[in-house]
Amino acid sequence: MLFRTEPSGVLAISQPTHAWISGQILRAWGEALGEPLLLAAEQHDIGWLDWETAPTFNPATGRPHLFREVGAAVHSPMWREGVKRALGAWGAHVALLVSRHGGVIYRRYVDRHRIGEADAAAAQAYLDTQAPIEAEWATMLGLAATTLQKETTLVALSDTLSLALCGELKTPIEVEAPKAGGGTQTLRLVERHAHPFDFVLSPWPLRQDVLTVEGEARPLPATGRFDDEAAMRTWLNSPRRSVFRARLMRESLA
Image 1 (cartoon, one colour):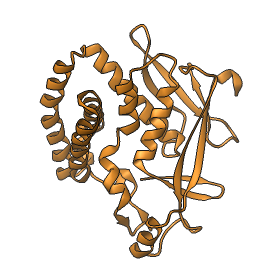
Image 2 (cartoon, rainbow, N blue to C red):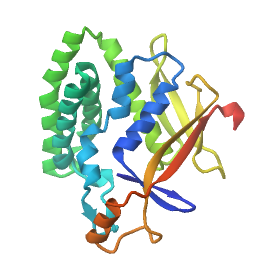
Image 3 (cartoon, one colour):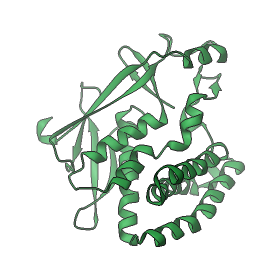
Image 4 (cartoon, rainbow, N blue to C red):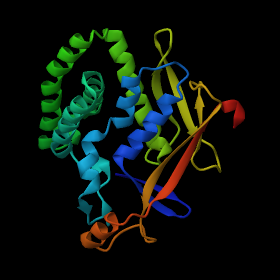
């Protein structure tokens, strides 16, 4: 779960909803992309599905735990289960990309001095376990290494952009994007001054000049927190939602 602060209050956005925003971005990409890639982007956080319906409570913040507050010892088994679900639901190509995105995340744990021993071990165990499975699926699907790397990069790129559009990352940020003819380029995302959740992305990679993404989120209480876990559980059972939006646009239109 992640949190977005708006003038009306704080919204709690689930990981699967954030992933949905990733899919919306790639569906507007300037280059035609395959359906397995688009679906993988939309579903890359499927492993969090059960957790998001019953998150743990952080008494220090009075909120459900932010996804960054949950260690690899907890979420790496969830991620492996998500890969299994993706395989059963959609097949090896989508499952492969979901698995590889988990690898992108767990390779960021390279500085083992910054995390606990259990989380470091869990991250390495994920990488060691999934690598041969991913190699087998890639061979079975006949995916060239360059194609697989491009698709993996696009999932990671859309993930990062979505986190910013959902309010979790502050701009400016830079992300690597594959070029249609090969190679990569650096994209820069900046939020427009005095225009919350309006962003300029350059060089522009999408088909249309402006892209508006949206999803549903849970409004937190006016105080931005809960008195206790029981209050949070009651809130989770409520059907109340709010629609949130964000825009991406060409620099020339800002």
